[in-house]
Image (tube, rainbow, N blue to C red; front, side, top):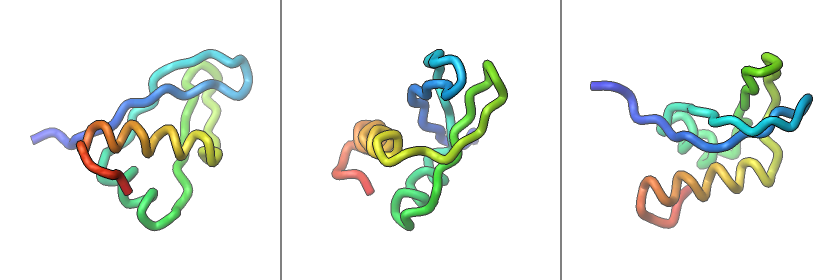
Length: 72
C-alpha cells in the first residue's frame, strides 16, 4: 500500500514560481506535533529551505482538511 502524502503549494525563494510540494503525511504530522523543522524543495532551482512559520501554518491547514479534525 502506498504511503499517504500531503500536497501543498510552495514558492521558490529564488524566482517566486509556485509549485506543488509533496511530503509523507506521517512525517509532516510528526514534525508539526514535535515542533520540528519541515524542509521544503523548489525543483525549478533545486533549492531546499526550512519552512517559515507562515508556511508551517499553511501546511497545518492542509493537514487539517485531509485529516478532517483539528490538526496537530
